[in-house]
Image 1 (cartoon, helix red, strand yellow):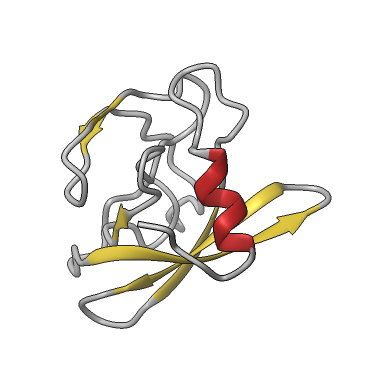
Image 2 (cartoon, one colour; image 1 turned 135 degrees about the vertical axis):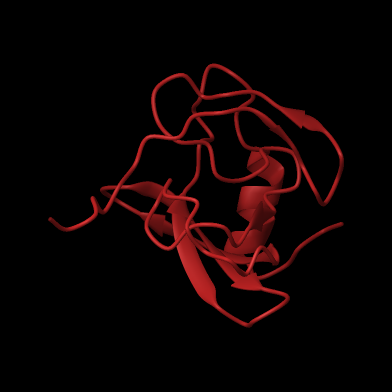
Amino acid sequence: MEAPLFTKNDNGFVCAHCGKEVLPLGYTSRNHCPFCLYSLHVDINPGDRANPCGGALRPVRVTPDPKRGYVIEHVCEKCGGKSRCRAAHEAKVQPDDISLLIALTAGEYPR
């Protein structure tokens, strides 16, 4: 049997980049920090936590998508891997920092 392509893994965590506490979203997997938009390279498929790399995923760009909202593009600082995920800028609990999302649509990380 094949592994699922999405595993719900909606746990809170402390951001390895900025150190802030990140709460669960409550409806899907939270995979990046809403304060700095960094993530960790821990998934092969969303939520599976099966990637042994564990490197910091730096946000490099945000692309507006008419169907998916904002899509954050990350690059792993350890292995160079790339990933994409939906922003949670409309979340009721700790929404993504909209000023960072807007800055990244212009290709600039302001901090």
